[in-house]
Image (cartoon, rainbow, N blue to C red; front, side, top):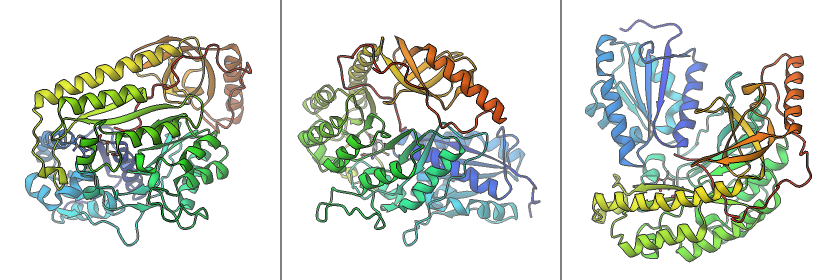
Length: 507
Ligand code: SAM
């Protein structure tokens, strides 16, 4: 029997999308609630969890190589518990225990709450085990527990799990199960908790976040229209019940639910960010049909333009797969065309990869690898040129920037505009200003970000806030105030291109 270690230490490594990062946070919380503490390195950890993504083959391969690297550590330290969680765990189940002999636990995304008990079992000499059961009858949504001192300016709140779409390329319905929605009251309470703890911005998270339903919401979706959901009603509920929330975003929506009601919500709710990430996947109707996306390119354009015109200056970004089975040069040209037509300012492009269980497996993966690479390069060349033009158009404008933290590359602070452009700015007081919304004069555009300067009113505002925080005896207390807009007109020059760039929310 292994000795039970008091104050055991854990590390969670995350691969893949924001959904996985969110799940990793919940794993940390359930472990801490059971007395575990975070380790600073793999060497001092008693438990190492790999939280995995299998949406594309590359992430899955990365997992296998990372777990393989730990084999020497595991043989030096046999009590070390190694676990794989997330989509690969769900997809492979027990087979993973046979394939990776050093593994002790395989745990599915719906079973995170059971992690401490499974690890305790291992520490008591239990056999390796796989626990990958979908909670279909009574779905569990683990409540986030904001940790004092580690509250991000921008928090993620899950609203649903699973996916009922059956896009032919996508493994998500098989690894995350069917759609289950979190009750709206739980969502609102969690957002309130984040805001009370100091977060200013929330991104609602779901595989098809805009298909949301909750019978408790008294606004019923237009009865017979399967595309109409209660997502707009959820947005309104959040805006009404959490007025101190500064910004609200959501990802990842499906174009099917980009209805008039959602456009109305964008038009009405100031809290909604002026940016929408809306995966299109392809611009070719023939390929969209093979992908089982359930819209044509013309329908996509109509619905998404309606959303984008709900408010001045909304920017759009998207996901695109290149090299889907049967994609011809003409199909790919149609994709480039929709990128131009929609003026996307951010594109997440992926080479198609075959995924287990998916309907597209029946189609031959017939676009050669070098053609996929070449198309991806052309896609990025186009999207980057649109991004550059958009960022350049912002030089000389004034932007409201939510300061988030120290920039990775400079001594400045980084923040985001109401859309999603990253702005680096020198701030007196540095990180203590994180969470404040300030006016920034944009002075320079880089490839993926902007640089700017605070105006004098914002400098004074930050100084006042710093003083208030010192008096309140807290380094980052409640961030409920925004800087006053010193000049009534927000921009010094109106940029020519209204479809602004955006930066990644997912992946
Ligand atoms: N809700 C999104 C939608 O409407 O499709 C799905 C989000 S998915 C988790 C993230 C992105 O991964 C997809 O939008 C798609 O572009 C990409 N993706 C999914 N399956 C893929 C595959 N088999 N090969 C390449 N890319 C894939």
